[in-house]
Every structure is written in C-alpha cells, then in structure tokens.
Length: 137
Image (cartoon, rainbow, N blue to C red; front, side, top):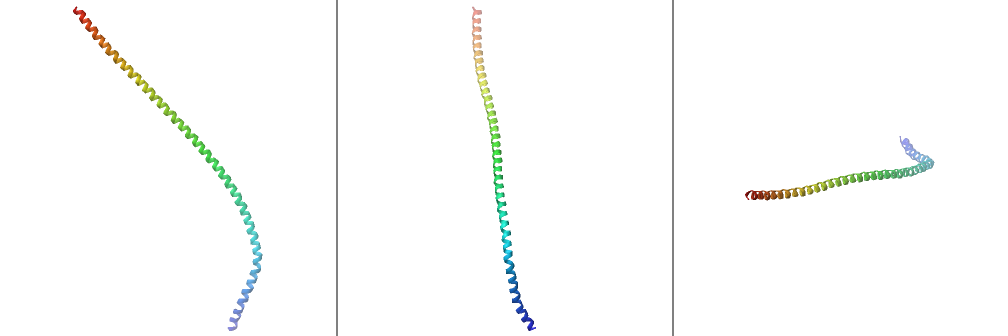
C-alpha cells in the first residue's frame, strides 16, 4: 500500500509536467492559427463596418432628403391653406364693407324720405290753411 501511494505521489508530478510540455508545444501552433483567424475576422469586420457606415450615411442622407421634401410639401400645403383663409377673410371683409355701405345708403335714403314727408306734411298744412282762408273769403 505504501508503495502504491509512493507511486501515485511520484506519478502525479510526472504526469503534470508531461501534460504541460505537450500543451506548451501545441499552444504555439494554435496561437498562430488563432492569430491568423482573428486577423482575418478583424479585417472582415472592419470592411463590414466601413460598408455599414457608408450604407448608414447614405441612408441618413436619403432620410434627410425625404424629410426635407416632406417638410417642404407640408409648408407648401400650409401656405396654400393660409392663402385660402386670407382670401376667405378678405371676402368676408368685403361683404361686411358692402353691407355697411348699403346700410349707410339706406339710412340716408330713409332720412331723405322722412324729410320729404315732413315737408309734404308741412306743405299740405299750408295748402289746407290757404284753402280754408280762401273758402272763408
């Protein structure tokens, strides 16, 4: 039993050292391969990033142009609506001015008619008085 323990105790460090040597030899080849793969991946990634950045810029330009054209069309439609409202307001103002003028003319006409009726009444009274005087004479 002691011999087995001694064998295990000696065998364990030898096994660790041999595994370490094997791992160290393979590590250099794996590292070179991994470096090559990483370099290729990075180059592809950078190219893809550049392509994506260019595509993003182009898309941003297209979006900005579309937004600008939408804003311009919105502004034009707002301008047309404002023109229509101004035209309607001008029409209403003209109608109000025309109505005020007609009212003023009607007021003056009524005033003249009342004056004419008073003068006619006055004249009728004078004629009646003259007729009465003439009948009395």
